[in-house]
Image (cartoon, rainbow, N blue to C red; front, side, top):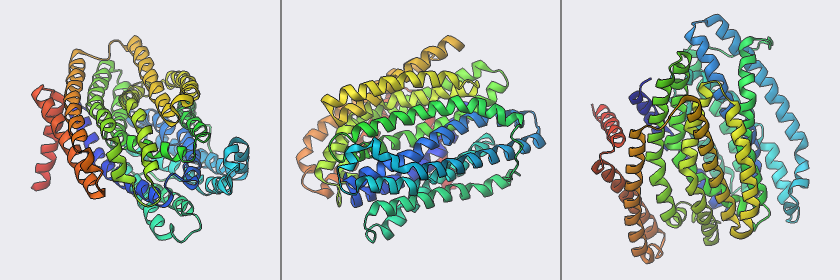
Length: 522
């Protein structure tokens, strides 16, 4: 897979992911409308963290990065019968593990009383958190099996069906929330039901595409399959690494739970906006390059792998640099435009915008970190990212405690951004020492050009945001119209400045976009 095909695949997935993220914003709007930054919103945010933690431990992150390199080896050697036995055995073992895990968490959920003493001080808050945890945790069963299916399809270079699955999750939450949100004693329960239904849809939608590749899930208790052992040897450190990331988020949530009410929910809302940027292109890019890197790794093509990573880093910074500046400058109008409805008050707006200011700082680091991690995974090295993740976890927790005392909610968000930069720098140093220079002159120049274009865009946005501030505060329609206008102007300024500065990557993306539009018009 060459660079142009990587960009085209990432662009295609990005379009689908963009639709998903738009629906995700509708979902978050609905949550803000029904719950705001109340205690119920805190309870929902924290309860949903637990299946997400487990998802990282055994689901999307660890499973995909461990499974794809081994599955690629079977395809490369054309060992079809052995590949089927491997898939059946791995599926069965994963299913058994997930069922046991769900049973343990559902039974042990009341122990949350001892970890959330502040929640016990508010009538009904801890009980709601326990109930929602029991309700939503089975989501991990569906999403992990969906992740296994995604790993198989991605290895076959089939990306779009898996990228579509989050759309079903968002639609289910939105529909159930609208239908049942106002009819239940607490609307968060309706959202929890939507999560569970959405997880089932994410799995079922991918099964027909799997069948087209001649693969069916069957029970096989031959757990001594050599492929299964190889995956778990890779998966254990990858799971720990993914778990470290989620433990960071979980610790942040627990520390936020000691602050003013609504802090947990505010962190979740601001994280959603950051994930829009990461999800639309960065996650799509990292999804595409892992099979490409694994294929080159199987052939021993280290130089080809470095070229792919170089290209991915350029595209990552091309997107995350302007997004960082844009979110910082337009944080208040964006939050007001998206969430200032129903029970989402002006105080809620202030809290979310404040957290977003510090979370946006780490966008570039997170994007670069995800690209570099794929290089390690494709080399079948899942231990190094785990060690680095462990180091940055300690940094993050320490900074959360220290910074939250002075900056409150903003301190927790800033701790995450600083630890992300530490993670990226350490990955970069170790990878450079192992395979040689990663960043070439072209990437260095492209980074400088993207930065210069971002500064020009920021200056213009800052001027007009200050100029139009009073008009945007007149009412909701004024704010929505002017915010969208400023966002569009920012994109155009950044795009034009990159063309003026002759950034070849933006020109490449322009060609892909024009080709897509011309194909649709035929």
